[in-house]
Length: 322
Image 1 (cartoon, rainbow, N blue to C red):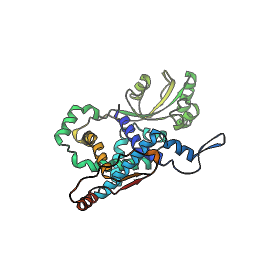
Image 2: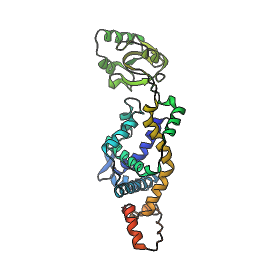
Image 3: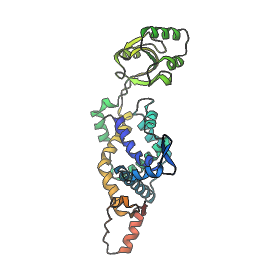
Image 4: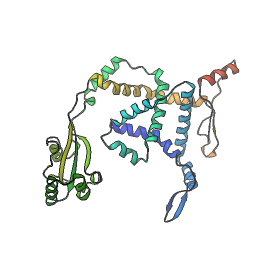
């Protein structure tokens, strides 16, 4: 699984509770030939699904993390969130981040809320994570090639099914025609047509061979002759080319630190969350979710009052969950 896909899956999990929690409210959630499906019917069906139990567990966990952060003076700044989001976005090809969010019905606010929760958890576990310079160096030596930045091209194209049509479009462009307008009018590529033919940036091997060969050798700005591929005929214009860069230990260190942190955190997260849950008072008012949170075991103490005071100072406030 690629790093970008791992991030997407993880982010989708973080955001699931946010999205479904936002679905509550009155009125109709949809209409079918004018017949409404009420929000109440939708909510009732949702409550009966296994997914609803997962969402409730996640919302409780998020509440416990929020309470732990507040009680332990853990703060997350906008700069923290900006840095994490920038790092995640860098793992996606140009232009695909926004498309991924749209495909999942997510907003920038959803993302930042989920990242805030994740950073809180990272800071809560930081005391148990220890990454040494020697570990960073060893990881870099073993995985050096994965941090190198390959050469990239930014280009646009117009795809048509026949050679005569491609020749006509080439002539129009070389006579001063507007590339974006002609792409919207003639291109048969559904992914780039409405964007004026823009393909964003790509590496070697991401396009079919004939397209790839031209894109990585043609002069910047030149209008190509028709380039044949299994999809038809392409008229290509290379807009920019970024040389490849070989990574250094210094340039790769932030990403390596994040990877090693995640590796060390992975076995710590579930015990930490279970510990918060065991210390919390969780009242489930909906019988549909009875038994979702096992009764907490009382902690024996020779001095109940002192123990209660210490517990109050070190753990989250009780969470009442519907």
